[in-house]
Length: 112
Image (tube, rainbow, N blue to C red; front, side):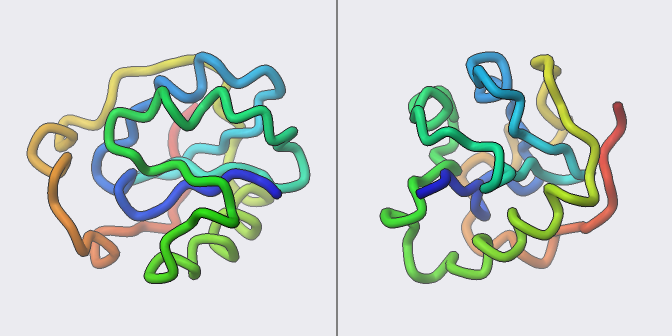
């Protein structure tokens, strides 16, 4: 089972996970990251690095975020790969503990 990036990443986009990923399977959107399920080797290195608990093993993904399975799979084929840690979004502190952030989700690709 692959790992999934879910809603807590939106408007935060911490990239601590990217720094520890041995296979570069993270892809960058404007407001969040996703993981390619085809490239993820299920090592689990990324999960404990996420400061907002946005990364879940697919079997442990809360049901309310099941739509992120499809979102990760689809957008990992459209967004650019991210291979180096970057600063989080300017909104990260403001949105860190906000729930129900899907309205801020944006399918636009992030910058390289």
